[in-house]
Amino acid sequence: MVEQIEITTPDGTAEAYVARPDGDVRGGVLFWMDAIGLRPRIADMVEEIAGWGYAVLAPNAFYRDGRAADLAPKGDLREPEAREAFFASGITERLNNLTPERVAADVPCYGKALDAYAPGLKFGTTGYCMGARLAIRTAALIPDRVVAVGGFHGGGLVTDEPTSPHTAIVPGAEYVFGHADNDASMTPEHVAVLGKALDAAGATYTNEIYPDAPHGYSMSDTSMWHEPSFLRQRAELKALLERRLIR
Image (cartoon, rainbow, N blue to C red; front, side, top):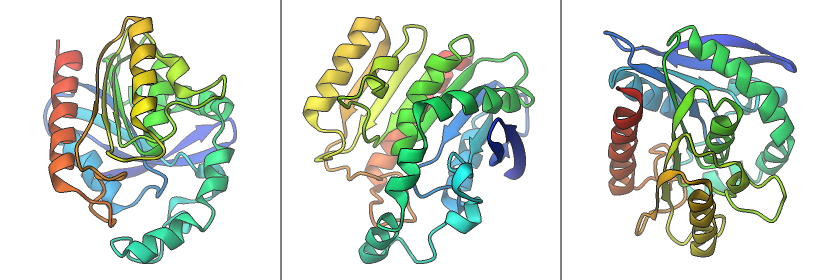
C-alpha cells in the first residue's frame, strides 16, 4: 500500500509517496516522477516496485511550485489535446525552477527519508522523462548509497550547459537507459554523447533507443502510453535492481 508522507527540505516541505514490501526490504529506490507530477499512475508504479522487495520513495520534485494535487492535470491526458494543453500550462517554468542547485539541496533530504525505510541498505534510483535527469544527479550527489540508475524516456540528458546531466555520470553505479524513439529532446546524437560520457566514467551501462517508443511511453494515463516499451523498461529495471541491490 502506498502512503503519503511529508519531507522537510531547506526550502519547505515536500510530499512523497512511500511503499514497502510485505516481507524483508532488499534495498531502497528513489523514484523520480515525470513532469506531470505525483498522481495515481505514479502511485501504481511505486507500489509495483515495492512488490519486488524494495522500499520506494517518490517525492514531489515540484513542491516549491505547489502541492501535487494543485499542480495535477484536470483533464484526461489520454486525449492528445488535453495532454498538449497541460504541457502548455506552465510546465516549462517549473522545469526551469528545478535547478541543479535546488536538486542538490533536496536529494540528501530525500535520501535521509528513504533511509528510514531501508536503513543502511543500498539504493537504486529511477526516473521518467524529466525524472531521468534527476536520477543521474542523485547518483552523483549520494554516490556512497546509489549503485543503480534507471532512466526511461528521459529528455534533456545531454545539453550544451556546463551542468548538463551527462556530465554527472559516476563510475560506482550501473546505468540503464531506455530512450524514446524519434524524440527531439533526446536524439540519437544525444544518445551517442551520453554513451561517450558513460564510457569516459568507466561506468557499467545499457544505453538504448526503444523502437517505436514515444516520449512518455511508461505513462498509461496519457496518450503516449506504449505497452511493449513499458514492459521492456519494467523488466530491465527489475533486473538492474536485482543485480545491484540484492547481494
